[in-house]
Image (tube, rainbow, N blue to C red):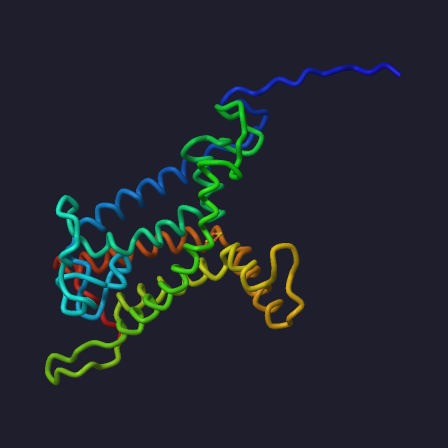
Length: 267
Ligand code: FES
């Protein structure tokens, strides 16, 4: 039988036989992530307008140091480096930022969008070798599991912020009364979306469900694995909606604090 030897040719950057608009997704990811990074960095350096009444921006929560009366340990600490502008957000943001940056879903998305690695499935990429995530520098992404521990703690703080956002001081009596404003709804949606994102984390599934190479036989752990897997199926949606919501909450609190908006009370 005759055998024809076909020479495979490496595709050039962006070359593909795909006919669909494969480039739309990486472009959208690039634009949304860039917009978020620019806004979040700007907001984190402001050290102002992060609080309004019982609302606290999630970019500044927990408020460990700060000029606000609600900060845990008072104003700027003495050990803060003189060359770095002080902002309470800079103390805490490395943890949620590291959690997102090392997330399995975001890795796949920003590898494509920011450095075409590859631009999309079956589309030619700019480099010739493949070192993967088992060698430096991308092996560092394995730190994700440790960021997860911090992210779980942050969910508790954000849930507490949402709870606080339901109690408004009555100016006549000086007492806190239950109420719901637009800020309450936003801060509550924020913790729900971040909870869905965090509890569907790929690493959490393994953590609750089993061992290095097999699932646990414990019914409780199997159930926990199923719950995390269920959330994990929508991980991309949780990732984007929680990202947009956290920025929306900061912007809303900021605009209230600046006097640009007034909070609309439903109750
Ligand atoms: Fe996305 Fe862990 S895999 S948060």
